[in-house]
Image (tube, rainbow, N blue to C red; front, side, top):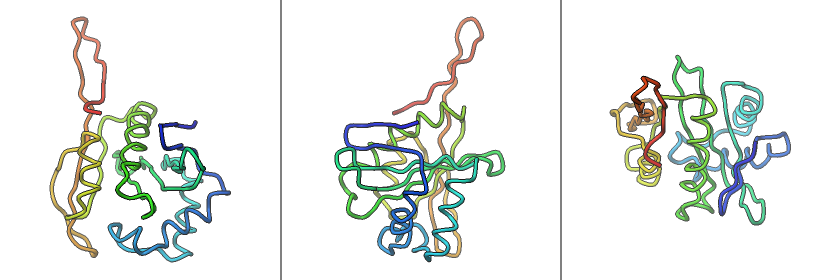
Length: 176
């Protein structure tokens, strides 16, 4: 499956994208809001999970014009019967609305494909760009937590069930 937007192309991962994935995840600036950079070894191990774990529904995000690798989006399921959304984009593409554009196409599609009704996500306190993206996707703040890397916001998204007169429940995702 491929998802195309005006400026982005979301494609399933293949081995050919490993070096781009490694560069994205080993960059200190790219991962500044994601608990710091990964080592090459840990990024390679994560890449192998991305392409081999059936609970990780990841897509590479490419520039729709020149096919340059811009970032990564995924939903991981199987986490105690919960799903979690995460994403990372290269610093060269920040502030252009590309992450929002890609996620607005990816997130409703993956929720429908996996029949998700509840998804969680996190964002570091002060990471306004990520917080804005999550809000645009319909996530609401559910609380604050802290780990070894510091405090972060917990967000959640829930589908809205619409009841019809004949008692059929149709699940729709709002707002997008």
